[in-house]
Amino acid sequence: MRRGTGDATLRLAPGRAWQATRTPDGAATLALEIRGDELFAEAWGPGADRILDDLPRRFGLDLDVVAVAPGHRLVTDLARRHRGVGVTRSGAVLESLIPAILEQKVTGDEARRAFRGLVRVYGEPAPGPAELGLRLPPAPAVLAALPYEAYHPLGLERRRAELIRRVAGRAAWFEAVTDLPLPEAHARLTALPGLGPWTAAEVATRALGDRDAVSVGDFHLKDLVAWLLAREPRGDDARMLELLEPYRGHRAIVTRLLEASGLRPPTYGPRLQPRRIEAI
Image (cartoon, rainbow, N blue to C red; front, side, top):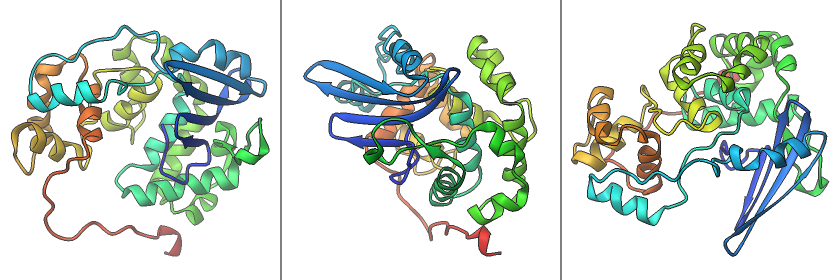
């Protein structure tokens, strides 16, 4: 759920995590700590009770444990070594959707820089201990009201900025996908021009607990899957889906396991260089 090391909405330390979020009851800061085999939670803010009550659902702790289907030896080994890897069901749709829009068709560095800027300029201090320095994601009403000129200095071109404004203006409609069956949720998450299967999958694996969503259209994932499952240095979306088919039902978990492996396909040619749109 963290968007880079500079994400001011979330802090991680060994065995501990803090997250600032918005709930239907108001803002909340959640603190988690692992002690032995137990998880302890504390929360602050108007949304504290709701987020504590919703904790098992939010992090998928109420989902049945599903064993990864037998298949490639690497996947079996990774499932054994990374038993905690799964998907989250935060229910905070806009908090996943806005960062996903920022990540469309740009490098990770560009997207993280834009997200940091939005949170720094238009977020608010989170409830709880001030020394944490956490900030809330910008409220949808704030994002919807911003003119394009406010987004440009943060590194956003007009297409992504206008899409964020449209999505934020229909925040309640998008947040309501948590009450829909997953196929209908995906349909709504792709209802606006500019929202495609990749964006929907990125939201579904964070906000909806979708264990089978695949980020079709991802710049890196298709090559990673092709390399780790078939030793093919390059792949396309069709080949990726073919290789993942034996794991249908929990393909999102398998792709997260592959990403957690630390293994990467061979690289060729220069890396794509980040742009500074705000300097144009």
